[in-house]
Length: 195
Image 1: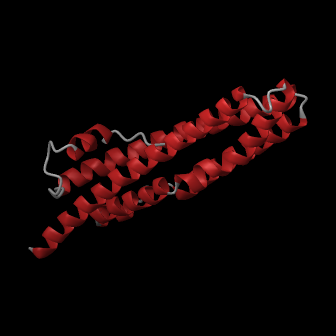
Image 2: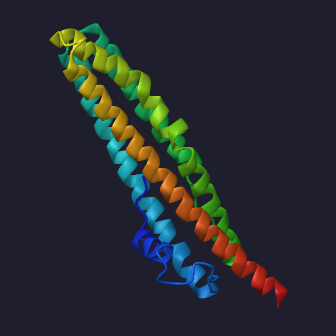
Image 3: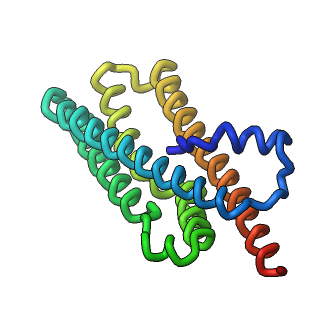
């Protein structure tokens, strides 16, 4: 979710290689707006491919496993994946050539704000839809294998929680980086307005 090509540049900026409060020049805004749009398209493409893989794998699980909890969990994971894909399509900022031609910095800022809101709330729309299905699926696996009360089951659930926590933290970090970019654009617009 958080693959932005400027990530290394922003990380270097964060660590002080450039003045953090230096406003962005208009040419730099245009360049970053183009790169940002490309990054969003690539990220969305990867997410939709991942959704197709999740649907295919869990549909296969539904067909081959006999344990009812595994079948129900698989169907819930498929439903969760489809909800996530729909939410991604609904929440993602989209290019608008007319708005871009009129005010590139306003257009770029609006896209950044939309992406920042989406990333900051990733727990609600990206992670939460998977939780019911994964829990039921894991319970079904535990029941089928007889490890319902074992340490192995707890380790598997703990691993899933760590993965979800990592995804949440990475997306929150990316949202903070986008807020820093928004602030730089706001400073540039304020300086231009003062002239």
